[in-house]
Length: 314
Image 1 (tube, one colour):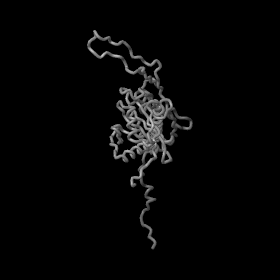
Image 2: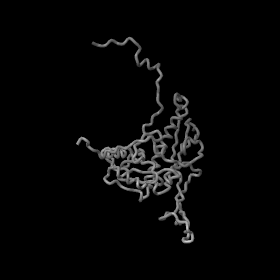
Image 3: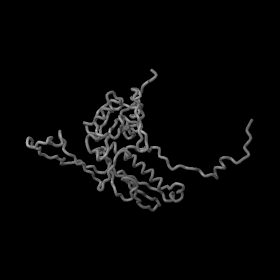
Image 4: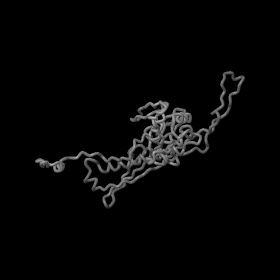
């Protein structure tokens, strides 16, 4: 039996009189960018940072341990410096955003069209910044790990023994491991198989697993087989261990201070004007780099396989 038509106002007609609750634009490619939250940053005035290192020797300086100066001579010497210290120049990440002023005028409520465009562009620049901190050829962490600080996994899978070996490379106050989420998941599987589940810790508003008290920070900028989102179940990547902080002679991020129209750390937004067609233009610039103050401030575990699984039913 056919239903009788409803003798009432329809949903479609009623919606024409109703207000719709809307979200601001949601950019699905954005990530938490934990690395820039846990890495210590230092501001620069002139865009260049020079790392003055002491020339390494077996001991920093020969000294006398004793109190009878009649029987011994106090050693004489000095501590030499590198004559050609490394300098880090800030890298610029830039973009130009255009907004039709008519659209900004007519469709500016409830969200400011200019601000939403700028906010999404800023987030994109910050995503690029994290990628450059890790992968840039000149200053990226992955490319600048000293050869003496690189090790490979024993069997491909990232086992607790491998992370312990990594800790021997950065044993002076290690701050955090850095790994792709799939590498962290692979490590968790190894811990589960051995009955040693990692503990967790809360940092910068996030919850992370730890190994030997050192948190594992996730980032998709440490690629698997060169990809942020690998298509294959298997794949290889690297895990980094970092000590951060200038006082710790660790790894630090660098940025420019005192920028005109500064929006956030090292990032400025400049209005470029309106053209004859009524299009407003904005220049976004973000200046960044990283510096490794000592060789033992960073280490890498390479050839990490992320695609091995276990059948616990057997």
